[in-house]
Length: 379
Image 1 (cartoon, rainbow, N blue to C red):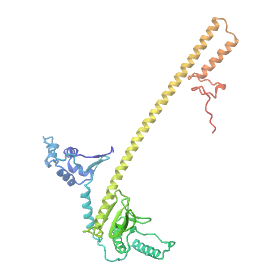
Image 2 (image 1 turned 135 degrees about the horizontal axis):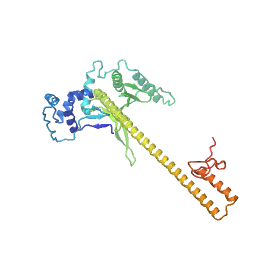
Image 3 (image 1 turned 90 degrees about the vertical axis):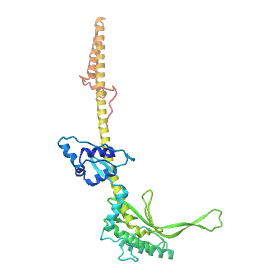
Image 4 (image 1 turned 90 degrees about the horizontal axis):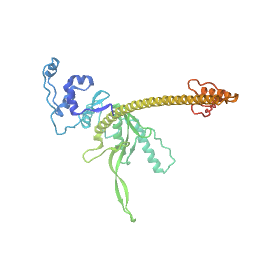
């Protein structure tokens, strides 16, 4: 992408010795401490406070060389986007900061209760839907109509369903308090900064070999009682599950932080992709404009060539008429018929000559350039 450029360690070194870190910070809205920390981490020497005053009064200054380090090509995290310097922290650093910010929110509880309390409308709808499915299954009434409005994407065994509802009730409420948008038209979708992610709560299953008399192996999927939250549309699928040391309920902050970091990453990629598309559109427009000029130039040359050719041929005709007339006079054979032919030929030369283009009624349907009938328009 022509308008997005990663700033290397060497380029940052050159930049900070040309422009003060304070000035760079103000111009590009990046904290000065952030730039200093990057320099410290990458062992980039920085100017002392007296450097700029010496430079101002044209005093001699010394710039220390950029030392060689083991990972000399290590990225600074700085990018130049359409002339604007931006900084993107390492994902793990950003994730830690997001987690810290989420934990510090005093109005939100991240603890899943032991029983449902003031359940969300989505939880009420999902519970009612589950009960009706149980009734339909028990009665084997497959014609029974079941409403899917506001039903969350939950697929667990009956024994695990109460716990799944409590977890989702807590997650849904937190999502809304964090300012995200949650929709359930067909599947549970959370939207952050215009980026949507499909959530699905499932139960882990294990394959158990079935005892059969067949010569091939057959397996059953047996519920394990372990919850798993998945984001389906990503590849590979992102998943949080119960583990031996940590339940899914204890991973709420991890889930929220990951979603926010992913939305931030997707937003940055969208900005960069929009810039790339604009850049490509400019390149295409320039190419198309240049091609148009080339086509127009060649068209004008073709016209010039055809006009010059016509003129040359019209002179060829006139020279022939002249030679013909002189020959008939010389041989004393110039009669009325030949005089009429000479007049006729001169008229045709005047019709064909691009400087004259005399109107000849009998040739009005003929194209002078091609000497073929003109294409007729029926409109």
